[in-house]
Image 1 (cartoon, rainbow, N blue to C red):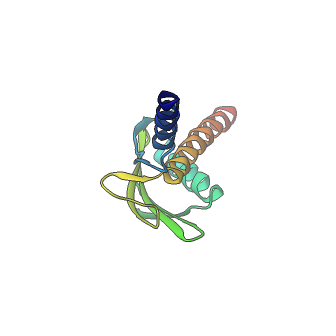
Image 2: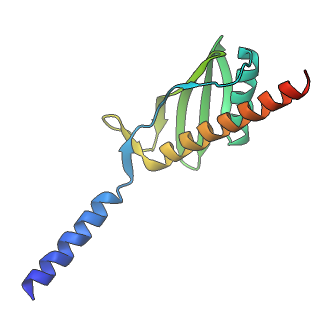
Length: 134
């Protein structure tokens, strides 16, 4: 009977540890742009994808877009560096997302993943649009 209790406690503790709300920060590093698109079109895809997801997107210098997201009492700041060949999404700052030692609340990673997927979709769509106009 005692062994069963210990096994149940061990199983529950493993499950709780695995369901933690804090994860390593997910950055997107040099995601390739497989389409022959100019940097201005890549910029357009990033700006539209971000704003569609609620990010406030601002170009802070050529090739770098700052994104800010405000969700209830939480906020996140990212930089999206881009060219006509690659783009990267990097964590800059956050508030109320449990950031510590390279780890952050899992919602941040979900937001970054969603943004990355949307940018890829938008680039694909703009590529098809560009090809159809030729």
